Image (cartoon, one colour):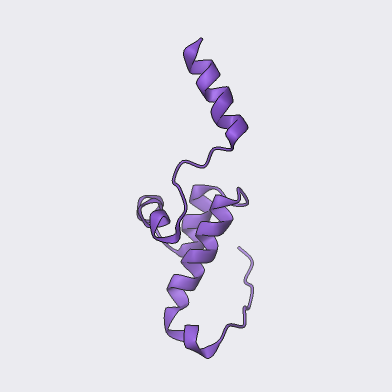
Length: 77
């Protein structure tokens, strides 16, 4: 894993873990990271990370509209 240094306002210093979790959640939401990768980044288990996604406005089910349509078409056939 690569380490990146991020400068944030001093007011976020006490929220370091929350900031990393938020970034990991948003990278998961955008499809840049898998659930496992995002959980590793946040230093959480997959289960714990998945349970926290809602706190950041991110859905556990990460389907695009076209993926969801394809899946529904597959199920109904």
